[in-house]
Image 1 (cartoon, helix red, strand yellow):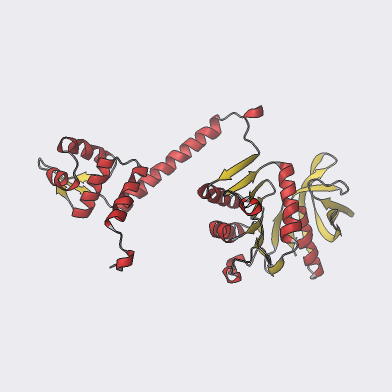
Image 2 (spheres, rainbow, N blue to C red):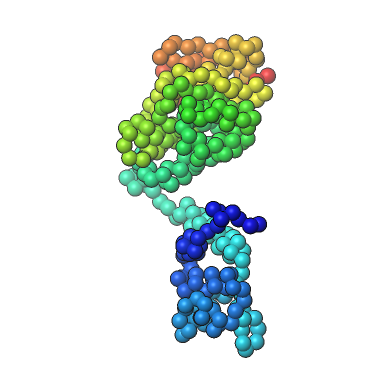
Length: 349
């Protein structure tokens, strides 16, 4: 394929692209030799010296190192000819090696790390720089097992869109609030099993995963440096969850409501109650499996959903009928309900 002139790399651009190979462990001499062989085809050692500028006394050491790294092949015989392997072959192999190294390190850390007392990981982190924030957003979305609450603007939408789709396909219950800058046409069929709302005005970007981890975009809150807060502390997650409901979710306009999905997982009580109430009003029959705390002990309970009771600003309670008795289900900090819900699975019958 012939590229238009505007798409062709300049000599300086090509030089810069090759310099990035240093990230894969190549020395400056190895990069020069590799580029020379890729550009000119197979050459003898003297041919490479003339074209690359690598000093003759160093050339054979460079070749030996490159052969051991899988960058170059040498012909048999006394007068050797050297050939560069394709860039994709070399980099794919190196990426595979690095991935295996990372897996070994992660496994070793997991098996040998001991955390006690103050040595444990802090529950709140300040994440700075766009690359770090992007990675943390992806990790948080990809790590969800049951539920995702999200309010995103164009940047986080760009970071997370594919990972949100993957979460929906895994069966994660997704409650998504979009800022007005995101075109509604971008919400395609892959989001038909998510609860999607749209805000009239821009707002803070927030992610809460399984009511265990959360991210708050502080730039949109304080208009300061590009930074986000990553939270794993229970009370802070509770406050962030409360903020999400009252400030982001409740005032937003519904644009997608799942019609075909028959199973929903929840770790957030108000979301479970709102969805259950909406379905009951639509004439649907529901059953639920709840894991939670009752009288200081973990308990599991299954039964039919009778109704939802809501006192504005005070409580969301789901009423469950099981074995001839009714039980009230509240959130993790429930004070008046029979069971404080930790996780629940709702079935549409």
